[in-house]
Length: 292
Ligand SMILES: [Zn+2]
Image (tube, rainbow, N blue to C red; front, side, top):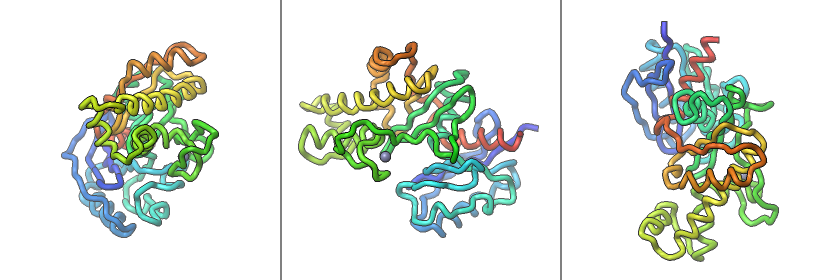
């Protein structure tokens, strides 16, 4: 019997859910709920979603912000714009069915590996470019979790100059250069004014002066981090995912990276597992876990 998961993607503004099979196919409509602002509100919303579906599925699989422990039932690091206390949620208590939780970027990476741009490539890294930056590392066909579960976080140093403070509290992490926030700070450096990511991309599309430099600098920063990742992990490919990936020019980054790295050339792809790759990856990982 083929197994089914209730995939639930908990984001800062929306909670998406759907029933997904072991091949990553959707067996139901995707339902959308606004993310409540309180911890209690989130728990009640999740319980409601689960209650409506749990008799039809074999596992409840969550994709969430924040690093997730090795037991895949608890969040162990900060979670951006989710409410205070989110880390205290014991996800296993929300359903009578088996429950599986994984970090959203790790889930996206698994979806790209199983059904997307990195299919059949056993060594790959997915970088999710959005307001922040996430990462998922697949080594020899396995999702790298590290000693605590937090492997693949993109908070390594880009510089020692103490130029930009990252959301994690440290200076000059990859995230504060390669993220949407990083793009905004680069625009501020070049134009001396505050712009949103959207305004920057619009200005670039309208070929406004200096906006090319902003996008170019941002993409150089993205590429610079990829060089380090490729030298460490020697991946078959790097997949660029997340809401900002569509604005990145893949070929120049691939050429730059391949000219800089000490290993053989690495392919760079744009993600192809779709907008719901987090939910799909969680479902595939969850089904794999209960199938032993
Ligand atoms: Zn950081």
